Length: 399
Image 1 (cartoon, helix red, strand yellow):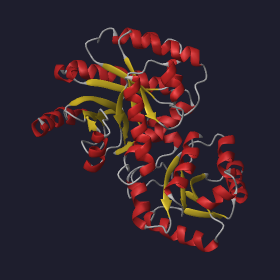
Image 2 (tube, helix red, strand yellow; image 1 turned 60 degrees about the horizontal axis):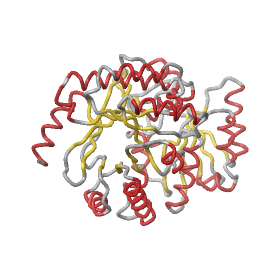
Image 3 (tube, helix red, strand yellow; image 1 turned 90 degrees about the vertical axis):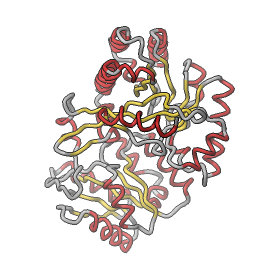
């Protein structure tokens, strides 16, 4: 595994190498150095042209990105290197980190995480163990247990390995569970690959619609097989690119026609501008006419914006978790969340806050008159086998 550290300070590079070496102990890791964007680009070019092992991970100092005006990131976008994981390190306030993070994500780069300096072993270890980045190595090790390359993900993505998980959505006032969002995982070789690893790969190859169809049909069949689950809304993620696929909308409508007693929602999330708005909106209206509702996911980030609220009859806005999880300490995020809830109220659109992890955040959302919440405060995503026992235990506890 090759790791490229990009930092203008030689001493800082040595500290970064030492800290990451502790976490990667036991792996065959080669560290390379670059003092600016130009030398980093040269390293990336060389590994691609002379057939050496490619760079598997980029660790970039924040000041390099800002001083060089995102030269390195723009290069990666230019050569369509969307899968190489990037970790940004540095010392700055949260607003600056958020600005840089949003720019990287909007360019579809694989931003693994941002770590504030001075580096701490625990912060690096958490990124690794939480599977926030994908790495590849000639000698995968169980010490990390999730080291995948893009080729490996392609080979392992198939219907047999795809598993569905369900994240509860709760009415903040009644505390009743009102629905579940469907999430996908790929289980292979005793490891779990998460959506932020394989979905960008599918989107780049224009294959995400295959995942959407499979999740849609499998989730409906699950709900159909257990009558008590029909008491809950079932929501599934969908992209504008899916909606433009020939025959996709008709197949979705025809299949849902066999399951009309299931309350169904599609959550529209986009990380790029809609290419053909007329065709996309026409597809959405056809699906809505069939009885499936639409939700605008991750509102406030990327391209989920006010224009869409004006163009599409959404039933719900979902506030991105990046704005929600810290509203108890971040006044800017608190103001944003409050404004979105007020907007939803005036437009008569339901509002769900994602990323609720503490009772303090939940209490603030309650006082803001938010209607629904999701997050680890109530539950992590549940496997199919965990779903019914969790519902039973939850109902006993809260009702």
